[in-house]
Length: 266
Image (cartoon, rainbow, N blue to C red; front, top):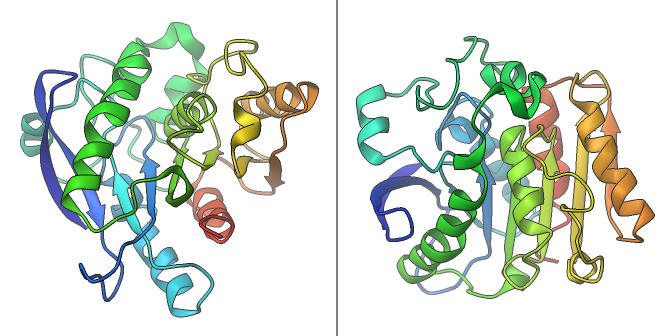
């Protein structure tokens, strides 16, 4: 993964994204893009350093099960600057002004699981909501489209995330089918908007080619994803509802990345 700084005009600060380029990447062709958002307690490094998204996708590309794709790892906390990441080093980090420090367990959700269990009252979620959405849509995506050999249309763009990032992916992707054709929420946390705010107009998410909602059956946050599933089912929005035997852990997120990635860009 390459760590790339960019200027966020929306937030008025300098921030960072992680960029994965597939084997054989070159400017002679264009690639689809998968945006993956991390959970609470980490930053843009989580999906590569701990969840090993690169190994999952490398193997699927080698087996011919997915198309070569670019993966982008943004910082879901809109207050997290490039300077914050450089000062914190390579470990699990968050902006200390927004939430408690992580528990230190790299296999599970760390502070993402702990703070999320506290509900919306446990922390200030605002930096993870509209400010990040605006940064992603107005700054990150245009930056990626202009600096990498990628397609710039919805049919070649996907958005997914784990825990807090899963909630962000659902919040953003469900109302932006003009930007993303594929959306996945893995183990979504309580930052996920509640019905009817999550699906104000059912006709909008029906434009998605794939809406994937998943959670481990042993996850203490299962109720969040169950609520999303029930809302979508009631409103007649097509979606995949995937519940397995995992918890709020790496196995759950790698498993869903493995399956979700094989359903996109087809």
